[in-house]
Length: 68
Image (tube, rainbow, N blue to C red; front, side, top):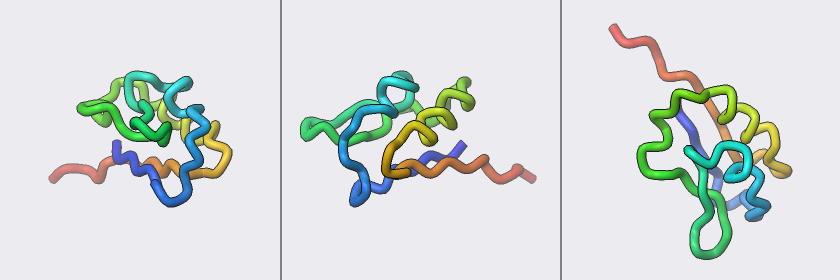
């Protein structure tokens, strides 16, 4: 799973960290950031819910491409 946060769009509402705390946290300024190793999550549904909960749609989620 690939997760990207647009730091220019993020307003620091914290919905991502509340919805998927194993994947998202907030930096010292209150903006969303990824927890180290959080992208290896086993809870993709929570990540999707966090992206949908973001009031400014600053989170993009994509499936990893298939490995050959």
